Image (cartoon, rainbow, N blue to C red; front, side):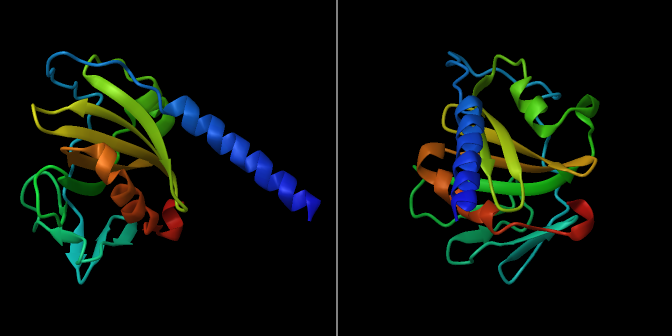
Length: 186
C-alpha cells in the first residue's frame, strides 16, 4: 500500500511540475499580429462525424450532440459548442499533421516558439496523450489555440477558437478526455 502511495505522490509531483512550468504567460500583445506559419498548423479537415462520433486518421472521440454540433466541415472548426450566446463561443477541429517541425517533440514546438503573437502557453493531459498549446489573439473578439500531442512520427493537433477560453477550458478537457487512439499510433 505504501508503494502505491509513494507512486501516486511522485506522479502528482511530476504532473504539477510539468503543468506549472508549461502554463506561463508570454505577456500581452497590444495589437493583433499574424502568427507565423511555423507556429500555426492550419486544420486539414479529414475528420468525419456520425451520431456523435468524431473521427479521423487514427483517432476518434465522442462529441455529445447535446453539447456539440457538427458544422459540416464549413469554416475552420468542425465542432461548435452549443451555446445560446456569443460571449462563450468555442469551435474545435482535430487532425493529424505530418509536418515534422524539424524533428521536435510537441512540447519543444510549443515551449520553443518565438513569435510575438503568442500570448499564452500551457499543457493539457488526457488519458490518451498530453497536449501542449499556445494561444494568440486572432482578432478583436476571438482568440485561437493550437494544441500539439506527439503521435508516432506525426502530431495530433487540435485547433480551437473561442471568445473566452477561461470559461470553456473544461469543455475542451472533457471533449479531449474521450479521445481514443488506434493501437498503431500510440
